[in-house]
Amino acid sequence: MLIYISRRLLWTPVLLFVAGLFIFSLGSVAPGDPAELMAGQRADPEAIARIRDRLGLDDPFLVQYTRYAANALKGDFGESYRYRGRDVIELLGPKLLVSLELNIVSYVVTLLIGLPLGFWAAMRQGTWKDPAMTTFMLLVYALPVFFTAPFLILVFALWLDWIPVSGWSGMFSTHAILPAFTIGVPGAFVFMRYMRASTLDVLGQEYVRTAHGKGMGHMTVNRRHIARNALLPIVTILGFSLAGLFGGSLIVELIYGIPGVSRLALEAVFQRDYPVLTTLTLLGATMLAIANLVADIMYSLIDPRIRLRA
Image 1 (cartoon, rainbow, N blue to C red):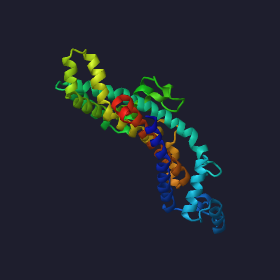
Image 2: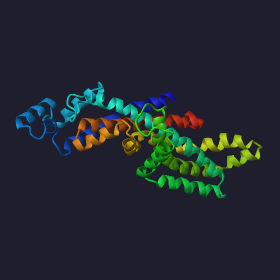
Image 3: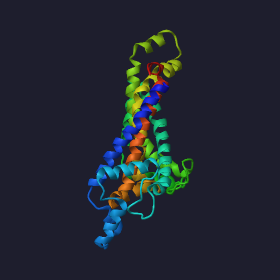
Image 4: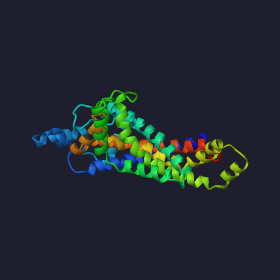
């Protein structure tokens, strides 16, 4: 198992190098001159030329990327084009932490609702409860965020005055409840559908009927033979969901006034702040590599046969 994990870890730097090369190349061919953005609209050509020389923008592409990669390995991702004199890590660090906390809480809500409901619906196939629950979750999933978020704010923050309406004071505070449910509950439908389909597939297997035939308890069969094997196909989805944690909170952070990375990312897109965009994209590639590794480890923990083959 350790050898298998080591092999995967050795491939991670290669993946990040290729992803970084692709991302950096997009920044170099995208419209807009970073020097002009930094200098402002009324800057004279000499000032723009000095900025280009200071940033090394006139160097060949491979020289620029080699310099960027070498600095990135030391934790230096450059200076923001929009916020002069501010390092990218200095800008992103606190905001990434807030977004990470929000998405972790939302992810937990998604799993705690979606997986049990999917298993519950599959065990009640053929009754009215299965299609009723599936239809209800589908309706919740279909509701847009710009409807559900104001509705939750109106009911729980304004009418009932139970929960704060905006701001952020940590993932364990009451500020996290409404945003987490706004993101997590619709996402639970996806996991419910996959868990239901996977459970139904396992229910038809011969070893489940054999376990019942041997007189094993209903709860034991559900836990040891059905739920455990039904989770195997879900692990891949879990891994890719982990990789896309920051993607689902963009609108929610703006609606609830959460000081996460979303507003900064939007500003970077409109202002062509390429160092910020490149760092965010590299972060996504890193999370994808880590998520795949976590998924492989979870496979081996759930199914000992995979661990033995690894």
